[in-house]
Image 1 (tube, rainbow, N blue to C red):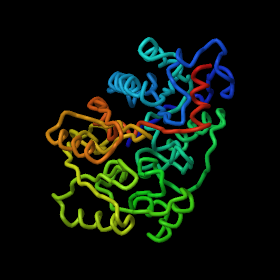
Image 2 (image 1 turned 135 degrees about the horizontal axis):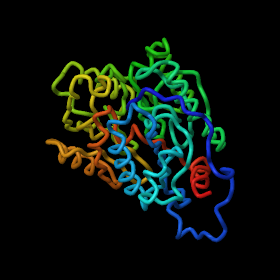
Image 3 (image 1 turned 90 degrees about the vertical axis):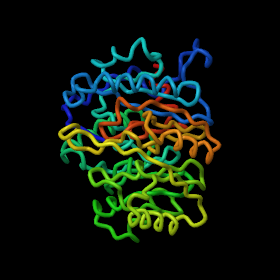
Image 4 (image 1 turned 45 degrees about the vertical axis):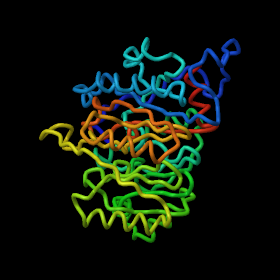
Length: 353
């Protein structure tokens, strides 16, 4: 979920060769890390820059998390890590060379400033809830530079939203929070209409956020099936719980809504600029065609949350230890950009070049 102060690095990309170049002829598919397949989704991570002072206190923790996460994705889905030239040495030798792209992308929280919906990507305008307006433009500009160089196909809109504030089952059901309405001066009906049009959605829920700094929906809910939605257990605030469930039931009649226990934690004063900790929030999971990468923290109610996930999905549950990154305000889903089809192939081939 969160952001950073940003060091103004050059936008120059050092991607070797054109993104549309074919893989070398002497490479067999068996020798390559990623498999070009319609059954696999591509997950993309952006490494922290070793020269970015904002991430210095947690630099090695983030690097270690991304390396471990990438290894868990390999053999299940496809993975690419974007890393700048100065930082690449921290990943070399730990991850295969054919999944590393050398480029300057200015932040690690790729979910928020990249594209929404891997099947039909849309790039919204990145908000500045966690940084200055100028910094948000620079961060998204660095992403757009890379996406344009690789000819990533996507629609664009001037509407403001962070990608973490869209939870989509990719089958026409979309959830966001009222922050989207506030940022764009929209009524509820206008917000629903805009998201239906842009995302090709049939049903849209706009719920109250459970925290006010980022106000993202992906720390609150998760589609584990086309018709099954997991939601944090908000029984400690009955009025809030009722309002959120009423909106979800109104928007998605007939779905199964499963309430999942959650262990909220609080950061010490002054840590990570006051962002709410994401430690203990298991629903911030990355969901692909066949797998769910679930952040785990070893907390009290975690096993019950995992049991409910397994009980309500046919997908594979893959646990990802996110203790090293969750205090910053996000974890597995927040750090992941997802792509499919020709767009995914372009990044995979660029990494192999």
